[in-house]
Each structure stands twice: as C-alpha cells, then as structure tokens.
Amino acid sequence: MNVTLLSEQPSLLKSAALLPPRLSLGATMIKHGMAKLKKEGTEQHAGMFEQMGIKPGRPWVLATGITELAAGVSSILGIATRLTALGVIVTQAVAIAKVHGKNGFDVTKGGYEFNVALIAIALGTLMRGPGRLSLHSALERRVKRRELRHLRLLPRQRRGSVLLDALG
Image (cartoon, rainbow, N blue to C red):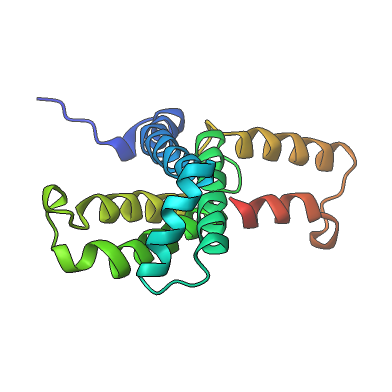
C-alpha cells in the first residue's frame, strides 16, 4: 500500500489545503459582521453588549462588526490574513468570556464549541498565512519580480516584500 503524506505533495496541493479553512472562516465572519452592521442588528447587539457590561454598546458593536467583516473578506481574498486572524481570535475570545463560557463546551447548549473552532482556524491562518492560492501570493510574486527587474536586492530596498511578509 502506497501512502503519500500531505507533506510529500507538491506545494500547490499544500496551498490548496489552506483554502477550505480560509473560505469557511471568511464566510462565517462576513455573516456575523454584517449581522452586527445592519441597523436592527446594531441596536439589538448594542443592548446585549451593554447587558454584558461592554459599554457603550453601540461603538463596540460597530467595531466588532467591522472587525468581523474585514476578517471575513481578508480571509476569502487571502490578503492581510495574519493581521485579521488576530481580530478573529480576540472577538471569539471575548464571545467565550462574556457569552458562551458559562454554558460549557456544547454548542447546542449555547456553549463555546463553535468559537473554539473559529479560533483554531484563525490560529492556523496566523501561523501559516494564506498560501499560494491568495491575493497576497499574487501581489508578492509581482513585487518580487519588479524588485528583481530593478535589481533592488538590498534589504533596505525591499520595502514592498517586507510589508507583504508582515501582513501575510
């Protein structure tokens, strides 16, 4: 029996393996962010936030909604994923601490099971980045081609690559 591990596969296949978690995280975060940014959603969530002691509720709901929406779009496109993964981790940690933690792990009982899954996906993205099948990778290839074309190989002249590397 011939068993081939993922680590032995071509790098394109490894990058393709990063796509389903990125897309599912992105879709989930867009849905949650949009729910908070709609007028009725903002008001509903603001009341909830204030009951939990997060005051003033409305600005925090808007900040959370924008963070979740940006993280979702970022995850789907594969640009600035490391930065926005931190936003997902923070928002989900607060959700566990303020809402779901007291209900235990089971999501059917209002627990934090789903939040932990989102944090795990975000941690994977934070550690690994978006992979080759991403806008980040396309921009990085373009910047590096331009740098090579202009023979800008000195570290102080590689600003575009450094910025892209930091954003992941």
